[in-house]
Amino acid sequence: MKYDLTEFNSAVSAYKKLLGNVNGKDFLFVMDAGSQVAFYSIAPLSRAVHELGADMSIICSNRKLESFDAIKGVWAAFESGSGDIHKSLTDFISEVDKKCNGEFKNIFNKPDFIFTFNKSAGNFEDSFSKLSLPSNDKWFKPYRMEELKKTMKIIWKDVYNIKKKERIGLGFPLIARQELLGHPLEDYLDSYSIIWASMDTANELGEIIVSSSTQRESMLENPERVSELRATLMGCELERDIDDVIFSKYKRVSKLLRLDRIRPVDATFFVSGKGYAGKHLFGERIGYPTQDKKSRWQSPGQMIYKLDFYPQSKFESRDPMARVGFTETVPIDIFIETSLVDWADIRNRNQRLKDVMDKCDVIYVEGNLKEKYTTKLEVGLVKKDGIRRWVRRSDTDVREKLNLDYLKMTGIRAGNMANIPGGEAFVTPEYIKGIFVGDVVIHVDQSYVLNEKNPIVVECFGDHYKIKDGPKDIISKVNKRKKEAMDLLLQAEKHKSLPSDIIELKKKNFERIGEFAINTNPKARLCDYLIVNEKIAKMMHIAMGSGFEPDRSTEYHMDIVFNAPRQKLDVYGVDKQGNEHWILRNGEFVF
Image 1 (spheres, rainbow, N blue to C red):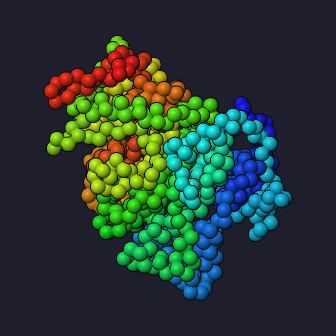
Image 2 (image 1 turned 90 degrees about the vertical axis):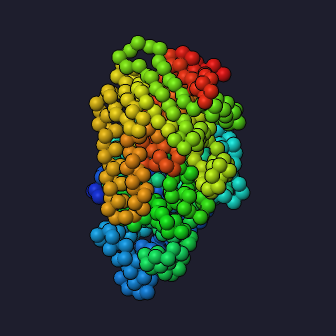
Image 3 (image 1 turned 90 degrees about the horizontal axis):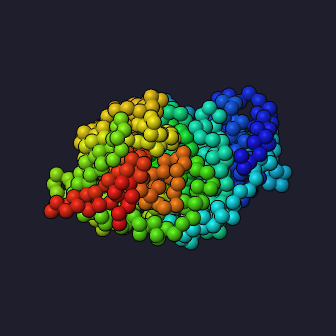
């Protein structure tokens, strides 16, 4: 291990002794983004808090945290018990709780501990309990840090094109209990180095806001309280001028507490770990109306990013407010090797593949190995009305908030999202028929490694799919994810927080294949993470569930990667005239 695990575990034990019995409590840590010792202390601190059965959230910035000041005002008003501000706030909460059965008011309870970092003392201090926690970053040892910073500078320039005065949001995973971690601890600790390099390089560009919170095992669990309050206030702040009794009551609160200090960033980059944020109560029970009130969003994030494949985007007159990119808890070596690249070259590779796919009405995939199951697919790219499905280049271009390609195609002003690393051409297929053998990796609540001896085998029937064979534990995780996704959809239907047409659309697409993709990144190499493996040149991936066009939206998206070179796949398309256009022969590119 590149870090000192003995020191890490020692720090965890020391923090647990200092904290004592805090089961069920909620912790908030606030600090300056420039303090390296404070930031790296969060890793053992979060492990300690989670092992003690408590929740935790982090907020840090390189500027004055105006949004945090606003939230402190909300807590103070909620606790005061009297006065005009308290009355307005409780009036708003009561109105929402008519649809939330009294659950909504719980998120307004102040966290049990609020620690701020005292730089001169080197301690985290809670002024109410007088508890002091020493910083401890002795576990950390720099590894390829200068290369990491170089990588992030290139990403900020070539992937994001960060502009002066833009605000940048960063997110990272806290360290869960060992049994909930999912991937090696070292990979999670690598994420702290990646985010530190992101902070250090973004600090030169403008304002940065870094946040994180305890993740849940299930999408149906209640989320960590502070992060849920922040999300809800952000969403309501964006909706305060909507002509609706709930938002009218919120607007009075917003004016009294100056909640306009809570506003979106311009660009987001985050590292994703295992788990979920939990259910978003306001989105599940009420939803956030589009400006014309013809549709509703399920979360503030959907509204802020306004991605083109959301069915609500065509009803929303507001422009996207931010663009977003993310990666997984990939090791530092792999992150550098796959992201310290010529991004223009990657985009050109994707474009060449897209050009071939755009000529085809149907793509055929045929395996040349005699195994128990052999990949053999027919992929339709033309809708019944004759309109072609949109073959897209890898989504690693978030240089603008607006998706200019989509605007040109549809006239709809939608946003941009990036996977990092990038490298693929992908499409929402009109239909897929046949079988594919997933022998590399699948992503459910995290990435899970597959292999050729026990692959996941999926049979596709045009308008639905079935898992034919595969590892029982992984199939169980897939079924659990799907059940929870359907439960959330049915809750939205019950509470009318989504329009009925979107509910029906998502139900119709629930058992469909949403993505067919061919990978192009020559620097990506085999690892335990889907976000990298789905970019390895010549490999392929298919996603069950939601697609990347608004008519194919549903409540989940689970990618499966399969090894085209190992399976010796032939991949070719046929155009209207019956001409063949080859992409792979025996698993190797032919163009």
